[in-house]
Length: 374
Image (cartoon, rainbow, N blue to C red; front, side, top):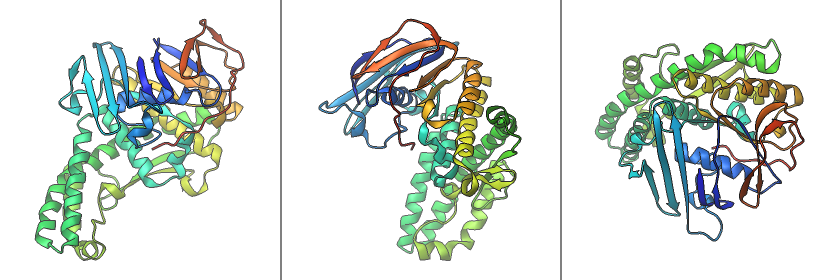
């Protein structure tokens, strides 16, 4: 991977291998920024900010990332160049005319400090988690979301203008898209839920019963049939028309749905402790990693600042799990005492220095960093 002008990296080149790769260094040197760059190369979005200008090194006008991706199906080069107003994306040296030809080349799964908000934060965080997870399996999901949001915006404009006929036209167009979006989300939740409880118990060493539930704002709670979900959407819209006109926006749809975590049958959001919330978020990431691995090439697992988020018991359990994963694990940590084989990199002043390969057993220096999870 080659970085130029990315946040705290004026320039950096690094080669990564399979297994555990640990990045350490003092606070503010760029550990999280490096993981952010890998994440951006895969998703064309940051887990820290939605402002493009914040991704560029202070004093620079642009930034670029290039990565040589090697998989069982072959290899390719992904590149992204951006300034404060535009972005250029290429795959294999050719400009990507469609995002569908770019997504899926590099798959990453992230566990970061503020991911505890996946449990207790606002629903939009959980919807983004689901949509990103679906997108890693079905790249055209980004098109569904784009088209639905376009129709939603148009219908809301017609509601504010009291144009009922036009609102009805947009509603019919939204129904099919809503059915496909929710059907895909709910299928994913069912798949995640199959191994969630057993993995949660392995990670935490408890006998707590943890489950997942997708809460739809209009459709039956059990169906995954996209046509039935879309039909229910179309039937419900007329009954909500007066309320929609009064409020000036569409009051049902995938934009109001939520993913609910339950502990012993109770919603985890209001009741979970910090330790429980972190363990649930960690389990969600590992289960998603397992699902993607079953489909073929294992995704790259990004783990930011593990030492600050988990107590010793949970940290050991998590590391035990990481040791059994295939593919690459890129992890930042500040006070780990791992007895696993891996590579160590020192991050200092926006530079990355690989150290000798050896078992990772020594105390890693530095203080914790916290990032904002979008």
